[in-house]
Amino acid sequence: MEKIIKAIIDFRNERNWEKSDTPSNLAKSIIIEAAELLENYQWSDEAVDFENVKEEIADILIYSIAMVHDLGLNLEEIILDKMKKNALKYPVK
Image (cartoon, rainbow, N blue to C red; front, side):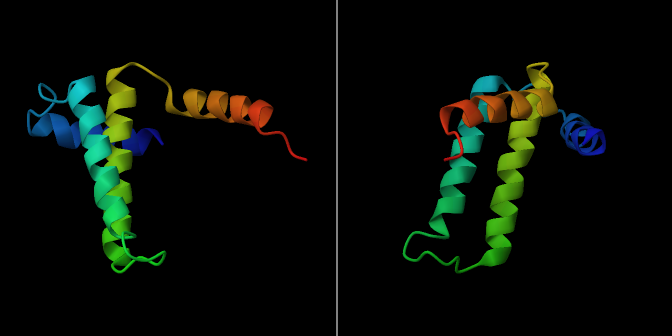
């Protein structure tokens, strides 16, 4: 995972985009990309363009990982913490 995080941050920083990657802008970008992902399923439960689905998921993850990095969070830790909360909220029946 560290290799992916480094690749994302290096790519962004080489282009001097870190100044505009504020938490607010990243959150907006995540929502915009999520809407673009949803467009693939607007009229059907089956994606029309599976390649575009993969690209939109990647965009969402890239922005999310950049935000995690910028906020000084540990990606693995916050995911595992949330999974623990979900297990309590939604126990196996």
